[in-house]
Length: 252
Picture 1 (tube, rainbow, N blue to C red):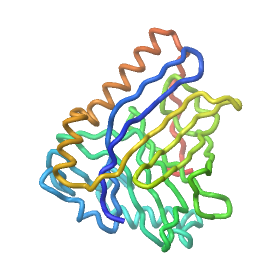
Picture 2: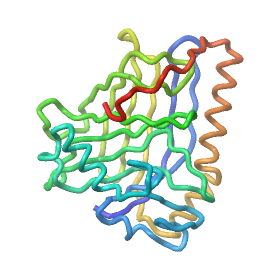
Picture 3: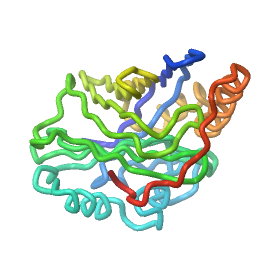
Picture 4: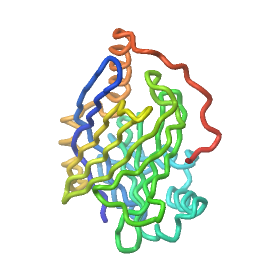
């Protein structure tokens, strides 16, 4: 596994009252944590300011400490370290001009043979809070492209959905195409469909530049679009849910 650029799109479709759907181009980085330094280029700084930057303080413990020991500790706490003795890869958006907001980043935890065993979804909301959903099969077997992993929703993200129900995760890799499927269910009914569809490219300065020209706002655009879509739902008079206290546990 080597550092890669994942270029594609994010798709959201609301199925609850006042249906709403949108699709935007975006790109993320695919960063094997044991090879993080190799991702650096004239356009991408690792712990340095560039057009794009990646800093440890944006993830994990958020204190700038190394990320691999942090995720290894999480896996050990939850009895998952024996099946995740291979590479850990972080899929996330970099900082653009020093600014970043990642609604969700994914940590892919593999065994020595390269099989995907555990995924940690690192979720952030616009209130500056964060929560981690750790998903794996009960018997710790390899996660396949047809598998669905379920996590109970415990963290406030959108004021237009309550903190209840469950998320259904799927991670589908076919060749150089990676699709992350995230569906939200409440009361047994699908309320929201999200797809992050990406195609792998070498993580070169040239590919980064081309991706930026296609998505010039990237992380800045994410915040703008969140607020724009929220305004559309307000106009449609969708029910508004106040933010509860964040869960005490950082990882569920």
